[in-house]
Image (cartoon, rainbow, N blue to C red; front, side, top):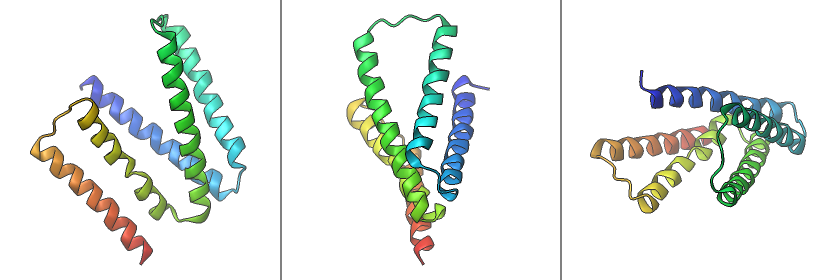
Length: 141
């Protein structure tokens, strides 16, 4: 099995568990700030632990600090928005809308990194976005 595929499957499962825990937090009406703090604290602790175990060094600390700040702010905003949305909207409506962020990532990678897509990849993206739109639309009905 290819490494990238294994990492992709692990990420899929990890994000699934994370999203499930968001829903549990919303259903139990937990304090969003404390939930977010617990998630972010756990991520920071585990990241530091893995970094120390790896024995790697950081060549550009300023760049790492910059992207860490952007990532943390994005994670904070995304977590709070997701949990709050799940308190008011059904999961089958909230998550398809939230998953539209994939389209933003693809567009950014095409513009910024000059990635090129095959016809099959373009068709897959269009199909995925169409399914998300249809799921969201049918959930409203």
